Image (tube, rainbow, N blue to C red; front, side, top):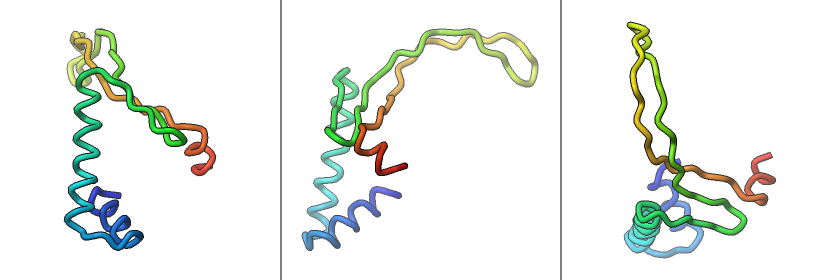
Length: 90
């Protein structure tokens, strides 16, 4: 599913104008991205939690040469689904 698909479904269910819904959906995603970049956790009740997790530095291997390569620490976005979402997916 793409962002366009989300907008289309909301437009069909609500009857609102396409451009208005598109702006709201984009603003929602922008706000979420901004919050994550500042280190905030996003908790959506009955849906799940988005947060930033720090992955430690480690040693990796180049698959072609087998040479050991250092992999630096980095931040990644993780998602933990809520109970209601887990039940719906089952």
